[in-house]
Image 1 (tube, rainbow, N blue to C red):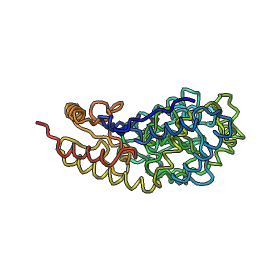
Image 2 (tube, rainbow, N blue to C red):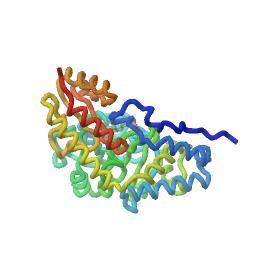
Image 3 (tube, rainbow, N blue to C red):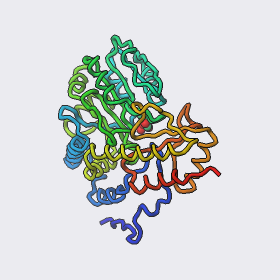
Image 4 (cartoon, helix red, strand yellow):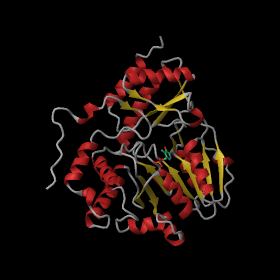
Amino acid sequence: MARRPKLKKKQPINAQQKTISFYPGPSKIYDRIPKYVIDGYRKRIFSVNHRSPEFQDLYQKTSAIFKKRLNVPDDYSLFFASSATECWEIIAQSLIKKGSYHFYNGAFGKKWFQQTTALGCRSKSLEFDINSEIPVSEAEIGQEDFICVTQNETSNGTQVSSRKIEELKSLFPEKFIAADATSSMAGVRMPWNSADFWYASVQKCFGLPSGMAVIVASNRLIEYALQNDDSVHYNRFSSIVENGRKWQTTHTPNILDIYLLYRSLQDAPKIKNTEDKLLKRKSRIEAAIKAIDSLDFLVENQNTRSHTVLTVKAENEVIETVNEKAREKGLIFGNGYGEWKSNTFRLANFPALRDSEIDKLINFFDTLSFN
Ligand SMILES: *Cc1c(COP(=O)(O)O)cnc(C)c1O
């Protein structure tokens, strides 16, 4: 018998963490993760075969709790992949037949477009301003069978509103819509019915260790893939679906992350409650930032400003000073990304952060002085 690991009783495990990460990915993981890992170890779940009834049971239960907590409609199914980046490839290699049309305003949306083009798809793109909603009426969408949107652009803290995704769906009902929700899924509600292929890697808003992505796909797309996906990649979507129907996966998956997803969702509130909480936190952070003359939000338009990734803009030196002062207080801010690398910092507003940690953040801004 293996000896069971003992947690030090005197000190809660999170008391050893002297810093709080507000990085929007990889981000702070739930404080309950160590407990889940030990439970899973004791249940021997990390050593089960991925074709065994034990794994099938875990997948099925994870799918059920996922759909319940995140309000996913019945005609959508949950699948696993290794990363959001891999999802770009799965969509390009398995699903796009005639072409794809990409709306983007930041680094992740652009990379998705470039990767899809590099894989030989006939892709078109429309870049839009961070303060404008996606310009649906300007898009010249013709034969393309896929429309691609980055629902939450982690690089600059913008989001595409549910209303806009619904508008796309109603204007192009015969097209498939793919949505990257890596830094928003599990934090705010998704208009599931308005897109066919939703995906997110779990090291951001899900508050889990990196190394897995979730895919939420519509029956319409699943049926289409089973008829039309004749690609030979080990992770072709049709094979993911065929395996998924047996509660199995194409290859040995990240069972640790699947188990952590299952446990963390069991302990999570309904998505509406999580969203309400995050929106309140967002308003508090906005008020604290607004009170400081030299800091501003990069995204001015409230309709396009993300709820879950907040990007603050200032002179380069101010950004450096604020990051430095925050670090002295044990608060780690996310660096700016791409073209906003030096003149912004980013703050995750993810559910794994505790109220007390948000309080520390607010207190930091309330007492910030530049002397
Ligand atoms: C982080 C991120 C990705 C890439 O995620 P990986 O897990 O590294 O593949 C893709 N899209 C968005 C919007 C992201 O925030």
